[in-house]
Length: 97
View (cartoon, rainbow, N blue to C red):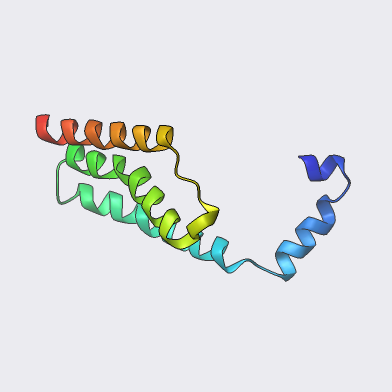
């Protein structure tokens, strides 16, 4: 939206088409595989278990981003608290299901 107001939208679109970012492409492929894997897992295990495993995804994302991006990714205390709460909630769901 901001690029449209700056009148740089067409140039940005041209740059993205001519110089594709391989990380966006890989991210799209792996996101599609993750969604496909989720729906395949539902046919093998209960939905509550698959949902609990899916809820752990933010924690895995935080860990992988820290490993892959290093100093560019800042892991703060509130972020860790939220990640732990997500992990505890997912664990409670899987234990009570």
